[in-house]
Amino acid sequence: MRNRKMHAHRAYLLFMLMLVLLGAAGWSISRVSGGAEYVDAAGRQSVYKLEVARSRGTIYDRNLQPLTGAGQRQVAAVAPTIETIGALETATGGQNRERLALALEDGKPFSMPLPQPIEDNCVDLFTVPVRYSEDQLAPHIVGYLDSMGSGASGIELAMNDVLEAHGGEAAVYYHVDALGRVIAGADRLIVDTTEDSQGGVALTLDADLQLVVQEAARELGQGAVVVTESPNCEIRALASAPDYSPAHMGEAAKAEGSPLVNRAFCSYAPGSVFKLVTAAQALEDGNVPGNFVCTGSLNAGGLAFHCIEGTAHGRVGLRGALEKSCNCYFISCARALGGQPVLGMAYNLGFGLGQEFGRGLFTQAGNLPDGASLENVRALANFAFGQGELTVTPVQLCAMMNAIASNGVYASPKLIAGLVDNQLEVSPFYTVEDKSLEVMRPVTAQQLQECLKSAAANGTGRPGAPAGVTCGIKTGTAQTGIFQGGEELLHFWYSGFVCDETGPRYCITVLRESSPDDGGAAAKVFKRVAEEVAALYLSGEAAG
Image (cartoon, rainbow, N blue to C red; front, side, top):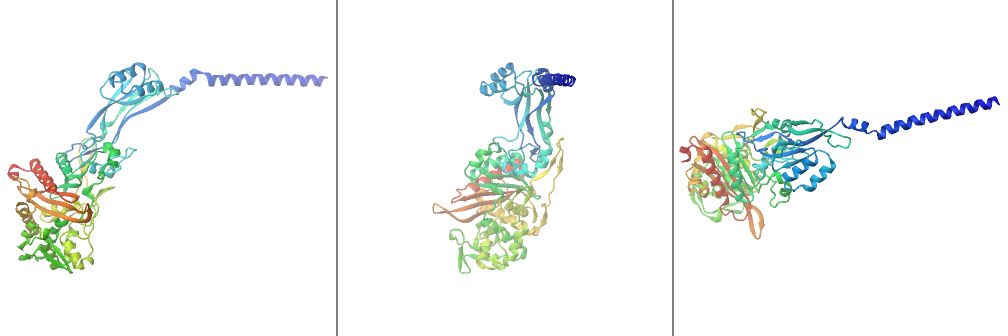
């Protein structure tokens, strides 16, 4: 009996203990799940970062005129309240009514561009840079960004590390509750380091000339224009047509004419412009025909090669042959020289070699025939006047002209002038690609200069010669073997230099790509660019 009472007592104690434990657990659960004070306290410790804008280093021209980030827009960082949303709806003319209503309901901070500033305690205004303009200068050189904001092409890619190192941001840090809503009355931290993006990269381009060249290049339909300054072969302007705006990449990707392609970096048959290479080697070897009689055609390996329209140029020397662009004369030169010496001159002038300006920013190499193939007399004849397997880029042709203008010293083309710090101080930038080499004697280059001046004044270059400016010009018309509507598509070239009081100074190369008839477009563009060069850079004495 006694044992039975003891067991009952123990059971009662265990039952009461369980009730106490269950009660304690229930109290704890109610504190955790229903305690508004606890949730609010936790929420006050959360911080939300609203990124309003990001910036990256600036790309400048040679005079530190910005090619990127020159435009600005106003962006508002907003902590939504009824009054603030009302003010924003008024400022935007009701165009964002639905978005603003959703933002108010959501309660989370957001950003939006504003056409005009407003004053509101819950709105922070930022003036942020716009990376690209609608009429972006030098888009094929500047390049564009990928969806993550990193460089995808051009200088944006080639110098991505430098440009990202000068990155900045505009941001606001808010205290928010557990649902991400801004806590009324709480302080916020505003950060704006977009001014750090003044540092970046300086190019050799001149923005004033680039604008003119870019507009002039549109006359070509499809083609390219390159301008260099001798003796160092800095690229002062470069345009590819058609062009595009990096602000509208979707449109550019779908547009006809492949506007994303940089035609100044692509290779094409050069035609008669290449005769200058054959001429240079003939002068170097002292093997220049001085009394050649052109009958309008010449047999090479059983194949008749003709001058343009079968024209018989009669008795010509080197000057006359370049003035009239006589194919037969230069075939005769190449026969006397042999293929290997002409090939060596072409190689020394940069043909057959790609030019890399930075990661992902390089020209095509073009194509030089090998020495063995030039043992074939037909192949050698084609090579002598810029046909056959030979292809070159507009940049390469301009560098060749730059070597002639620089009294025989070839300098590799340059595009990046230096690195810019946040105080706008420029440190020179060099690449392993940079080189300088005497490829012909000064007297050879000077003889070619005089021949080119004569061709501009009296020969095939006359339609493109600028008024009142001393210049030299060589033209070229290259066959492609591609027919459209029964007509062969041709490449039309103008390449030459304009002089200041010391001699040849600026070199210009114009290409009109794949057209059955040039209609004078290449000459018109060359003339306009040459006259603009004279107006911008040359003294009244040299230009007048």
